[in-house]
Image (cartoon, rainbow, N blue to C red; front, side, top):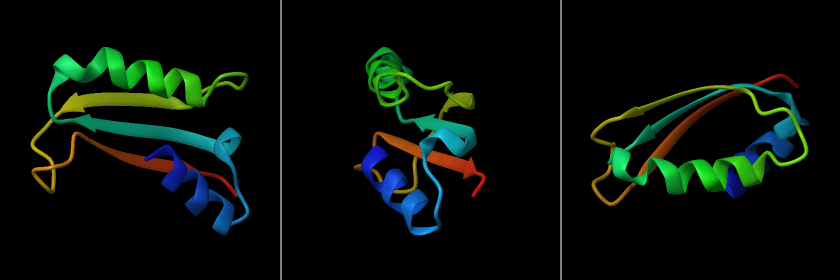
Length: 73
């Protein structure tokens, strides 16, 4: 998922250091710690953006995580 976000950011001349906020939806909060490890590693070395996280049924049953990211150019 982070690779997809990175690609979208690059397409508009931005990068992860310019993310302003990320909303994370998790299918099962039991997966929060694992998601958080990956999230923290992706932002290693830079200040991570504001983040909200919640549990929800997702758009497709096979998905475990959905993210909404807002960035500056």
